[in-house]
Amino acid sequence: MGGLVPLDTEVNGERHRREVEPRLLLVDFLREYLRLTGTHSGCDDGLCGACTVLVDGEPVKSCLMLAAQVDGARITTVEGLRAEDGPHPVQQAFVDAEAVQCGYCTPGFVVAATALLARDAAPTDDGVREGLVGNLCRCGCYQNIRKAVRSVGGSR
Amino acid sequence: MRPASFEYVRPPSTAEACRALADGGTALAGGQSLLPLLKLRAVRPALVVDLNRITELQGIGNGEATELAIGAMTRHQHVADDPVVASAVPLLAEAARRTGDMQVRARGTIGGNVCFADPRANMSTALVALGAVAVVERTAGSRQVPVAEMFSDTRVSALRPGELLTRLHVPLGAGADRGVYLEFAPQPNGVPIVNVAVVPGDGELAGPRIAVGGLLRTTCRATQVEKAVRLEGATSAAIRRGIEGLLADHEGYADPRGDTAYRARLASVLIGRGLERAARGPRTTEREV
Ligand SMILES: Cc1cc2nc3c(=O)[nH]c(=O)nc-3n(C[C@H](O)[C@H](O)[C@H](O)COP(=O)(O)OP(=O)(O)OC[C@H]3O[C@@H](n4cnc5c(N)ncnc54)[C@H](O)[C@@H]3O)c2cc1C
Ligand code: FES
Ligand code: FES
Image (cartoon, rainbow over all chains, first blue to last red):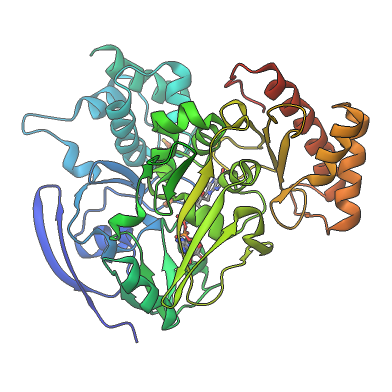
């Protein structure tokens, strides 16, 4: 049962060709097969957003997607946001606003915030709150996360 | 948890998807409801039929001025952002905007929301009030089913084995552009406890159409409430009597978030507000929670 399916995908600009079991989750493909452990697994049930990655630019929870489904797609994980010359503006904003305590939620927030800013370049406080309701922070850094995201929005 | 093994196909067309479903396959749309069940092994399909490559199932068209055709694989975010939906059926845009979170809306589909048959599903409630019709295909033909008749029981759709939901036809006119969607949800990104959609009638003959989710075991058209309101006016007593009538005829829904009596109270408040706003006209995006 469950013959392998071909998977040809680009992750952070690098092409990967594999044969995978259909039941393999995208989050496990990224973490276990590609060793891109920046994408975190929190609730493993679609509720916390720690596993958020971009699939063809769209924010998705990688614990609710099969690896086989990204055949032909372009994936960006938190590792792939970084520019040649330094951190992505959203990453830098999280550092500057001290929007990180334990850091477990941070990769998911950073990727989701990047997607939010692509939809709305200068979100309001409510815009950030509503845009990021799919991401949870157990340490409760919400105020600083909101400030971080708004500082990027405001600087545009 | 991780899913049990299954075979996986990603057909490029509706016809091929129907053949795979006829072979006993389970459709995979946005996966936002199916993946958690696969991981819990609450469902263990032998064959998963991924619909995501079927472009003919995606998108919104209004070739006909009298209705809007929405492909089953149209994502919630697409519905929420679509300018035609926003002007012709704003309650559907509102229901989509309030479904899950940004990530869920990027994957979840309107067809999956209906086929999952959760009694609290946002899109189902809006579609029932709008009088939408589902187009269902199988290898041997197709049939049209009013969305209100798409639900057999809680999380059991009326689809027969081998059937694929391909499109939703939303009739325009008859107050569709003045309808409202309201919900009471404990979390901004979770399913509501109760939701309500109201589409005002267009004149003497037709009164408002009301749909309720989270009250009965399936999303339903609240015909008893419509009747009570037509006869007695939109008073809270009439609405409550209508809801009692509904509960006398059908089994109520209950879960740890609330028993049926609580849901009935929420439904009567939301229906009252919905009728008031639908009658008043101008749209509002004010939050209910
Ligand atoms: C964190 C979170 C929050 C959510 N919040 C809400 C909310 O507030 N309101 C709400 O309404 N929903 C909510 N949902 C559920 C979400 O809307 C789902 O997208 C939807 O219920 C299912 O759609 P899907 O496309 O993901 O379908 P899937 O999960 O892929 O499929 C669901 C079921 O329908 C069947 N199916 C799907 N499409 C078809 C088709 N075209 N033909 C035949 N069968 C089909 C599948 O076989 C499966 O049984 C939430 C989900 C999550 C994870
Ligand atoms: S791990 Fe995917 S949403 Fe929590
Ligand atoms: S910083 Fe610890 S969970 Fe967010």
